[in-house]
Length: 118
Image 1 (cartoon, one colour):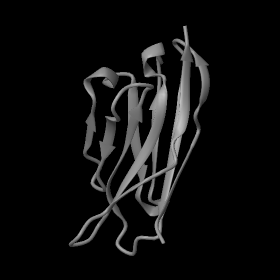
Image 2 (cartoon, one colour):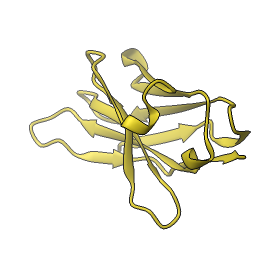
Image 3 (cartoon, one colour):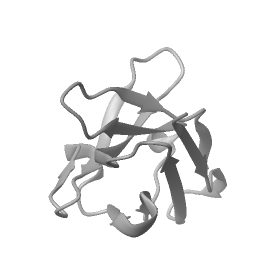
């Protein structure tokens, strides 16, 4: 049974930092890629950053230079270091993990709230 569990959200002032973690388990061949998405009230879910097992990364333009995604392949865990946070970063952040198989399946975590006050 695949599980995806996020942690690390919270309330922070503008300019502050937060670190999110996401651990995935239950896939025999692991997960590739893994990534973070976010959804603000009244908006569609959007990509924040993704990372492959080889370390290739992809970022939304809005977070480039402020957010850093990293990965521990031995633990199927990813991290999102968020610096210089802005009120517009306020959203529920979701972790995505795609199983490595001939028929990959996307799994999502339950989401963690990030609130940035001005």
